[in-house]
Each structure stands twice: as structure tokens, then as C-alpha cells.
Image (tube, rainbow, N blue to C red; front, side, top):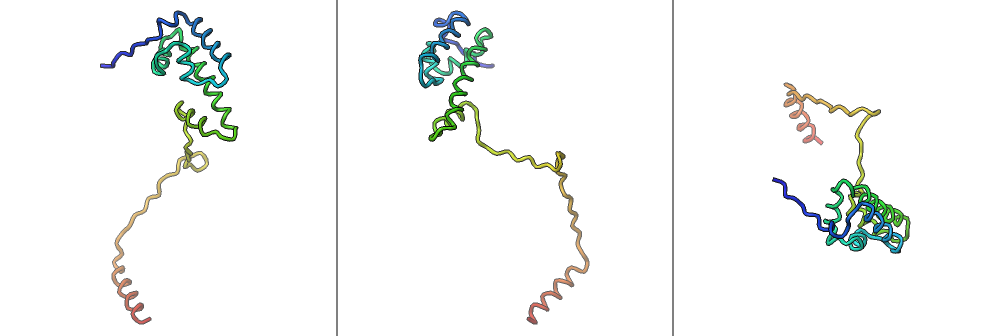
Length: 137
């Protein structure tokens, strides 16, 4: 049975419009916005409560747009001299810095090579002959 998550900010934010207004106020009055700062400004008790609030249909759009706005700010910081903090934040937002290699040939998947090995009746004779030649040298 899935555990129900309680959403605690409902006593602080009554309507989607109020959430949108308070989020916009945060962005206008904050020089370097962060997810945690936005959560605090909106009256959430934790980032998780903020993320859980996204599941309320009337608030989904504003929460997602606010998160995307902060993500965009971090992405812009990647062009600066010291992007380490932005990289860390973006990784916590689901970004990865991995390289994916597509092993295809002309857009088609490469078929595995099938090799059949059979025992050659003369293999033992060849092996003995090579050993004798090696002893001569």
C-alpha cells in the first residue's frame, strides 16, 4: 500500500493565483533565486512539501514553471568562470553529464558476429610440428 504524503503548505497558499503572485514576488526581489529560497518564501516547511504540492492539479503549472525558471538560471551560470555550483544544482535537478554512444551502422543495429569453432583433426599434428621447429631454432 502506498503511503499518502501530506501537503503542509495549503494553510499558507490558498489559490493558484496566490501561489503565482508569491512566486513572482520572490523572483523579482531575489538576486540569486534557489529552490530552497523559493520554498521558504512560499511558506513550505521543506523542499519535499514543495515538490508534493506539484501533485495538486491547480498548482502544478506554477510549481513546474518556477522550478524551470530556477533551472534556467543555473543553466545560464554554466557559461561563467566557476560553474561548479551550477553543475551540482543541475545534477540535483536530474541533469547528467554522461556520454551515450549509439552503436549502430547506418542507423541499423549491428548484428552480432557468429563464429563457429570446430576441432581440426590435423591440429595436433601441426602443433607438434611447430614445437619441433621451435626446438631447432
